[in-house]
Length: 401
Image 1 (cartoon, rainbow, N blue to C red):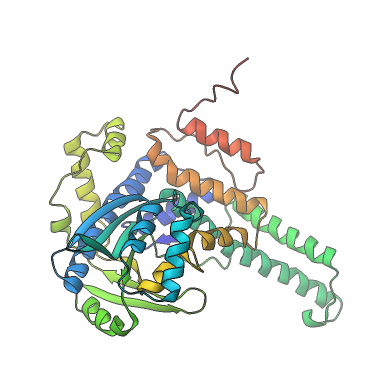
Image 2: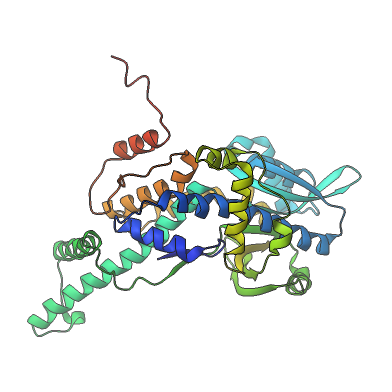
């Protein structure tokens, strides 16, 4: 099903997601989810910052500035203030951004750690780390699962068409199918998938679907320096490039997937600090020492390796991706609007994934019956109420007589 390769205990989480899709939760799932989501988020933040600090120090020396931001506008402002070079296109982009900054999705939530170089009070952006937010992780998981199920439905519909062609003594390529019959066969294939889910039957053609960008870095590297950057990256201890994908066209960058082996001793040197996660764990009956011990056990019993995504991009193309021709937020909107499959099964998968990944942050101890079954039909209003109940939110206006 889904394997989040930036996480530890990823097969355990994969199994839990599969069971929830079949409406087979376990009484122990709330505790498992807390570890899978909250402990993994803490672990990812530790190894990502540790790895990035080592890489940026090797690239730029030890005299670096770190800054944590929570909104995209903070990043966009920074990259236009002190460009490392200028040309006509860069000047145009900066001028248009400064004239109407509100048009560039400045309020987009963006939990990131920036790496900066300071020279006589002038800061330049070298790169950043970020962890995919829970909602975006749920959305990505739902999209990956839905795309695969859509292919399964298409395959099943083709099987029905083959059967119809054989009855007519034809091959499928010779078969002329009216649009209404194509829709009928697609819906029939969809119902076959729903019946399998409801009956806990296996879904064919469902490989292990990997999500590789929960932990991510962006590194500003000019094109002529790319080979030198790769040399530095691959010489880091326990770091191996697994995949290299070059994007060319409206968006130009190189995406690397790297496998690393973080040092447990270094990452576990500090106990859990005060914060929302510790508060949630304490509500579940764990003191700070017990929570820290549980986190330590979680790390030491997990996989030795994890994977992260590194986006390598030059300054001008990074500017294009933030305020130019290929703004990241525009691409997200296009991605959401361009879904091939929009049936109620697809929406239910979105609901279920959001509920699954949000549940640990609610502080709720008991799970009870899952509120989403993939084979049922729900209005969006119902899911809104599910999420309100999860966080014990009441709508005072609606409840007013």
